[in-house]
Image (cartoon, rainbow, N blue to C red):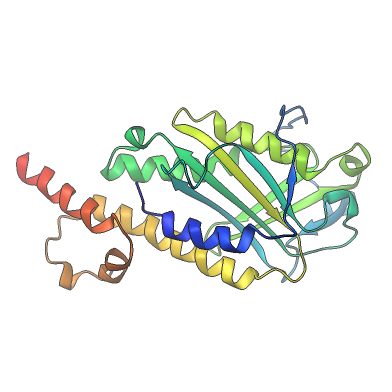
Length: 242
């Protein structure tokens, strides 16, 4: 499955820099809390991606071992203990899956969305994600007490890698956190929006029996992305055989 591979390669050119810092990958030993636990403003140290600052969250899937060879955790910018006010923020997860387990059609779309929705079931203590899927924004409130207790991107990152790893089709996770002020968030946002277009096109292909690509509003996406048109015609062949 090469649907997102070009976007992953573009993202890596932004993320693999001289100032990116590897963090240790290890046990997910930072405690979790209930999904109903809230961090009020009075208990908040600051917000990652707060107010009108960039706040990006994205999960990209591939089956290519060369793109995501092993688990990895990387930070670009200051770590949580070094931040003292709202800063721009991005979280990018590159997931390598067992290609055969993703299947095709609606099952493929559900598998991709299930991986994306891991973030909705992720509750590290003192790290409250605030997600607006319609605006493709993902900000995080950081609790004062959690910082005093040692919360860092290493702690929450290993917890998130563990959350992704619970999915049986996942083979490796590379997680990037970005808090750097002068990072090119605009370019990263373009890549994440293109990834969402691809995901919606997969859903469209799964749901429609349309044969004439010229009349499809998503033809430009299929033309640009390797694998989408093939996915479409395999689906049409399956319909004919039923």
